[in-house]
Image (cartoon, rainbow, N blue to C red; front, top):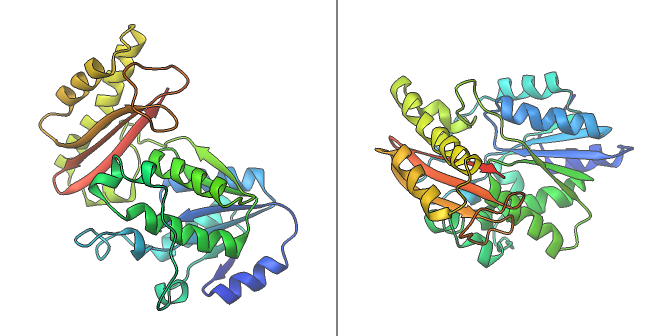
Length: 273
């Protein structure tokens, strides 16, 4: 497995590749959720490149950029264990210069839900992915469904700029207790880890209501918020795959989303129906 630190090293490496290329973008602090993306790419492509880059452009002032968990040696080991061909681990100065051009995320998709709490976040995501997509020119790029809104925005960007890249959605990986895996889970105390389970339990509650025949979005969200108490809830939402609000569940075209604070840590989760 190659470890690439500069864009020139990546360009030179890319020139010598034959066969399909899978790309897994990450911000590091890799866990089993990331490993599942890497393993899927390895199974579907001759070559898999993983980026490990803590992208400052997608963090707002006051967010956790400075304390975001880092484990470079562990990240390399996970990539190697999963069979990645190369890891791209650039510095910020390697990716961003002065007087940069940037990409603006699609307004309708980027101004709701996550975009309300984190305005400009998706612009930073699109900007760095545009750079990586141009450098790597992958056949396929792999994204977790936990970041459902990001997934929709990346698909729209690829479509808008006629990029010949297949965006591959990958299932959420959960701990045995149901908590969706996240690098930010490392911030949580033992007590907070128990409180965080209210998030996945609220989605289980929604799922059970739907299985019993309840399709009204308002009733489902009310039950979810009751399950989430006393957590500070940022939002619950029920949307279709285009992120349009739904008054009633459409099986095969619905996502139920939640964002809530556990202590000072903001976590997101969802289920796809």
